Image 1: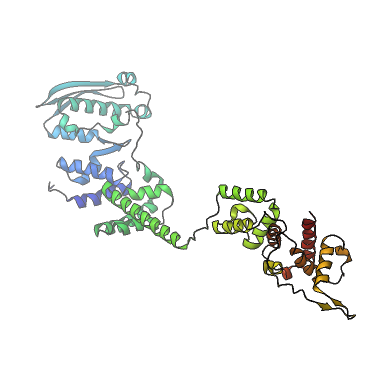
Image 2: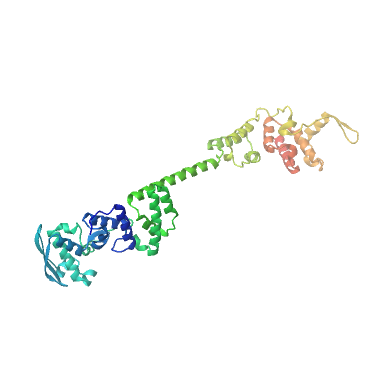
Amino acid sequence: MSNALVPYSEIEKMATAVAKSGLFGVKTPDQALALMLVAQAEGRHPALAARDYDIIQGRPSKKSEAMLRDFLESGGKVEWHALDDTCADATFSHPSGGSVRIEWTMKRAAAAGLGGKDMWRKYPRQMLRARAVSEGIRTVCPMATSGMYVPEEVQDFAKEKDITPTAGVADGVSHERREQIQAIADQMHEHLKSGAVDDAFLTYENADLDGAEEKTFLWTFFDSKQRSAMKKAAAAMKEAKKRKEEATDAEVVEEKPAVISDAQRKRLEAMISERGLDRDEIKEYCSYQYGKPHFKDLTPQEYDAVCSHIESGDTESATQQPADPSSVAGNPPAVLADTTTAAGQVVTVKAQADAAESRLSGETKLDSAPATAATNIRQLIIEGLAFASSALTARYEVKLMGRKLDQLTDDQAKKVYEWLQKELDK
């Protein structure tokens, strides 16, 4: 057989095939590749790795037959003195290492805590022979062991936790699914060879993989460098997607209008209290004017407008009349002029003013006004404002909440008139 070196790419393909087969105890391409490289380093064809080596509990081991063959080929000799189910006794000699006699008995195995194990009970002779071969050759010709133990020894080692993420994962994947996953891995490898790392990862992302076992199994077809490159590409794509979403959100999100601070709200409450205003009426005004039934929801601009509205009242004079009280809150001016009744009687301006003053002073009550004259109530309100102070006029504006007098319903006008009567009687 030729000892020509096999190209690394060809070894990779063989390793993948061996791992895919699930034979020889090799479960991942990485495990198969490692053993094949060892075989080639020792002058064997990489394919012979499956013949001469095993993976036991995640550890590499060299079969006792392969170890003994290499020992004999290198000039070693073995003389068996006893070989049965109770004892394996032999002398091992080598030109470079001298000779040694090794004896393994079931009594020795029991003392080592091995005799009760399943394989020792079923195949005691083979287990004793493997121990004797390994110990004898390791003593006089260690190069024939390739730095490994025989599988029978490895399986008796204290079982260590296998921290390899892919160890044993193939056991949970059916043979049919392994072939399908192999095809996906081949597609990803094609992308990687052309430098399209993003496309390789997207192939993985879009693959129809069922559960963590199949996903992990797929990753076993790639070395650590390839996996790292795809993970970096995935992270970069994720970050780019996040930035794009943030930019989109920034375009569509409208900035919420600022609202007044808690200190401003408390100041507004204090102003209302200091001026003896009805808090509910101010809230009613804010609700009507700005659609804000709560002071805390006012914007700074709305807050300034309400404060200015409240501060505009003159509390120094209770008798000061506005220049044109009939025009308050947008009401049309009340034109007081001499009028003639249906009976032909002339009623002077002075007579009308005296009558209004008499009504507002309580001498003439609302009940005495004509029941059908709803307009008269509005007229009485206008006349009453002629006797109101600036402060009362300001409160009247709040009462109307920005509406004009002629926009009030008859019931609302009646309530406003009754309120004005009470305020003027104070």
